[in-house]
Length: 255
Image: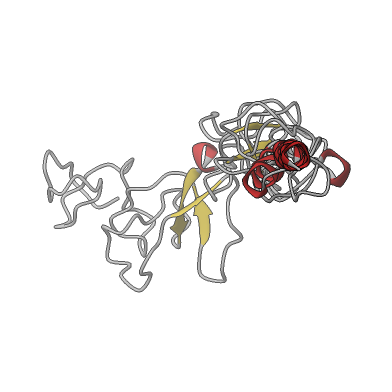
């Protein structure tokens, strides 16, 4: 009887040592979960590791398959804004620092290569072969002899220096001559019915019924053909030679 009891206790002891403990099982499950094992909710190979999109290495919301052209740089993706400050393709559209990028400046075409730009500017990071001028001051970008700062050609009918005036450097002063003595009224004579007598032009303006235009002024009385700057002063109580003196060194007259 004593032998049977001892055998029974031996069997119970052996079974107790081999049975798994609940705490051991929990530790194994927890360890497996921490290691990212399959079926434990881990990210696994190729995942973002923080709840992002699988395969999105830089966590910018785009994978390479979704158009991210540099999945190691979170600033590069199809939703990024192109920036002139970078030297890579920010928005993955195939162009680096393309038109209208952040920080761009206006560049104008200079077709005639005179250093002055025309119309149709583009906002670019750097100048290009077609858009390389920072101004649009050229009034004719097809002719290199026309631009600001150039000397106005004499009477060619063209606004050479782009100042909104044509041939001003070649203009001649034309004066109305009513008495036909070859000397025109310049605003100092008795002809006060003409407010602005002098006309600046390359050619003589068309005359009126009461006067023509000449290129010599100084006539102090354009109603009398014997009075003009080239006349001889005579003793007639008049300023015959338009020098503002009456009968100075005059000769006997009038003739």
